[in-house]
Image (cartoon, rainbow over all chains, first blue to last red):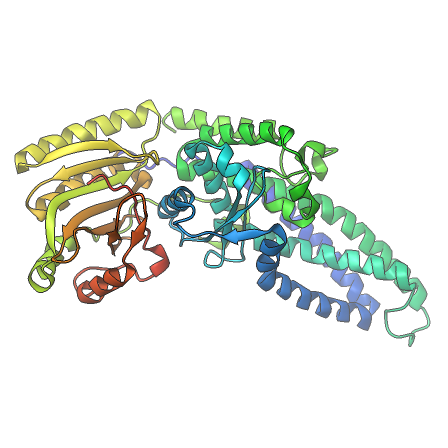
Length: 304
Length: 192
């Protein structure tokens, strides 16, 4: 019996970078919570309100997102190929079948949402269905299913929760001056408020960069997962090249209008070509993804 | 999947689950006597063919072994590649025990070669008095069985979930049936 082959699809460096990023995020958020508690009642109240928003986001955001995207759930009779492709991937990846939706858009794209495997929805645009070969579509769908397996929606929502609170504080702080922070019972409210706003602004800035980094790492992980599930890294690479090429030619308006928050879950974000600098991008540059997939193909061909 | 695997986005594809494939060798008796559902003497096993020389040679060896065993049993073996890029080893033999043994031979050879995680499922064809096609599908990742009853022409993909649930109700004591209905994946374009 041959020894189990384990090296294929593993990347300890990537996992380490991901854990370090999450640790740093946690650290930054701990500072924020500390400052909020030090500031008194107002800060705690804000966490409670934020917590409510957070729960709402976890439990309702997928439906809202699907609606804003104009996604429509499709049956197996409407999209037999898409359904059959995803069903076989689910068998292979040991996943329950997700809901499958389609967006009417020429923009070639796909995304997955949902807080758990049971509530996940995988969505493709009509553009991507028309553009890709079956094997490429399989690669892209495996990428999206890996997002579901890795619970990327929940992880990114949690990661962005305190960043959202920090940004709320900054906004409220600017609008209302020292308006919150204990209802005027304290005499040093003003100073405390300035500190809270400054710390929040710093937290927001740092966590933003960290979150983008985390998002990029999770994209690499999803590419890797797709390669492991399908055993065809080059099919996904070919799909990425084709999508990227089509993006240049397709008008970029429709999806981007509503995309802001959704961008993190796309196979290739609509605005990827505009990303000023890679540290502000939710997705790694195409070249880096192709290189990573190329390394996987080499490992595979070498018999792992 | 562990919390750590989820946090680091590390995902591994499962190999075959504990083997409950052989449950069919005994369950088919109940199927035949109680429901008049009989084997059509044909079964297939589906796996992802990797495009690597390593994998090709393992598959070639495996095919040779399975064909040799099959000839001893009086069975025939064919290979199909379907439109989704998966490969089918289709085995014909009148005895269902022989089919189970041959199918198990294919998966064992792939596991021994280190590619157990590429095995998807095994499919056994049956028919009943009112159903021209009843398939019993064994999901290797889960180690569970489920029935699949397609209806109508292949192009118009439909299945009779009602009939599948009836079959489940009657056979559940004999065959370990997949408990989650959302994992009763249909397989369209079964080549037999």
